[in-house]
Image (cartoon, rainbow, N blue to C red; front, side):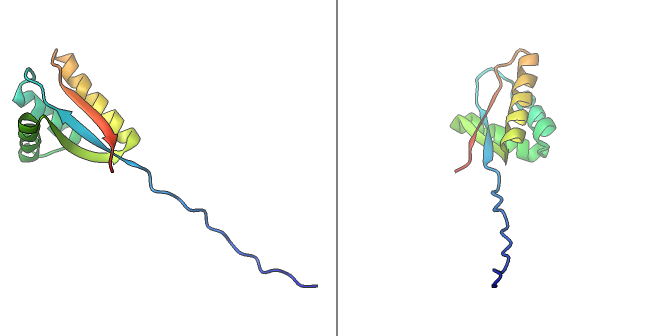
Length: 98
């Protein structure tokens, strides 16, 4: 009687897809408020937040950061809601990173 050797198969765990959080420029939300939201929600430094805000202002959009889907959507929603709470049309969106 021959016995086959047992082979352990490790399940392949895939890395979760990453999503970009994108700041969309508008002509109504004060720049200082955008910087405050970026610092608070995304933990950016004053300089980083200012650069992101200016890039969105000049180009229409700017990638703020990259996270797993749940984190990206939560942060984008919270940042957008911060603007709504003050009556501003501040908008953050998410999309898959390529």
